[in-house]
Image (cartoon, rainbow, N blue to C red; front, side, top):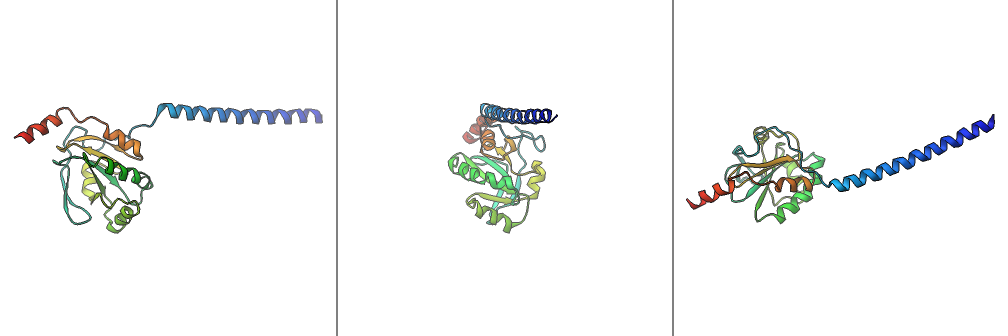
Length: 197
């Protein structure tokens, strides 16, 4: 009888080893599949104004007390990045935002928008992640009018104030996917006509 128990014991160990091998092979296949698919774009939500429409114009004041208008006509495209000082994903994306603002400064303004109206916490967040050079606006109204209640969330605006793209931006690939969306048809031509008048 002890021989039967010994055989069953060894069979169970062989099954455990086989299951471990299968798990390792499946994990490797998932990794290969992930590498083939590449990074995904930002997750777009349907809340707030639709892409291609004019963004709400909101008069606000930045942290230095200067007036600033979210939306409307600007010299460059504008990336509004909604952040919160308590948001771990905002902290993770902060270095990418800093690098993006630096590399795209000729054609893009990056504006941080917080609907948490707590200046000391926001200032601490900006200092910690070296984002003080970026314009930062505290505005609950912007959150309501743009329909944004999660952070980090980015909205890309054309020079004429139209929404080009929007979505959750947890890392650099999400930000890049938002920037790579083509502007709405006719927007650039409209700007050139306005400039020539």
